Length: 225
Image 1 (spheres, rainbow, N blue to C red):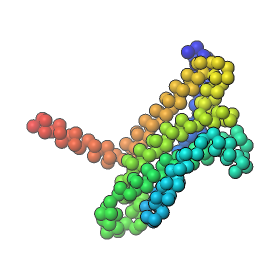
Image 2 (tube, one colour):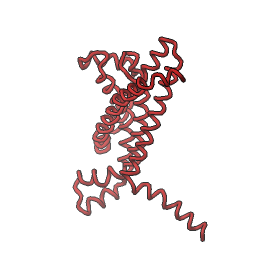
Image 3 (cartoon, rainbow, N blue to C red):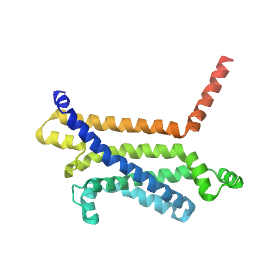
Image 4 (spheres, rainbow, N blue to C red):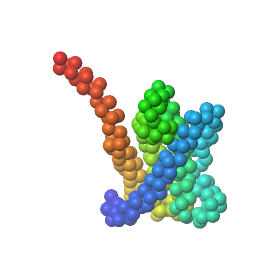
């Protein structure tokens, strides 16, 4: 505990570095997954190949990928860009199927009704289909976010600064406090980011929160009656 208190500035610095590596990857994975999922649903013959192919990306071991990417894109082994790209690939592997299933859950009746009242294809997608798929998309983003925050730690083996550096330094110098701090901060960071996503979902999709409350209110009225 004394080691943790004495090294709070270092822990804070590594926490920010951890976020700087993980959050861009989550955003990239989400943005890329939407058109891939939409295309997979539109062309049914491509749906399973796209979903299976992207899903298999998650089977690639993370450490070899971190080492392989510099040779492919011409960066140094310790370049943070390698970590962001690798995490984006893993995030895409998780997010594409979630996005495809979320968009596919919007019924044909809803699409037809939106078209009937004058929405264009693009307008219908962004105004009707995407909001209705929002809760399922949010669930997928939460999984990707927690997974990315966890995987960032592996990059410390290559010398990229993150909370994983507390693991490697603590192990090399036999400092238990450093290892414990790395584990705790990674878990806390994942929980905070997950909570922020839930709150953002409630702000951006207030209708979903209201829908959940209606059955509870109805049951309360029945009990009161």
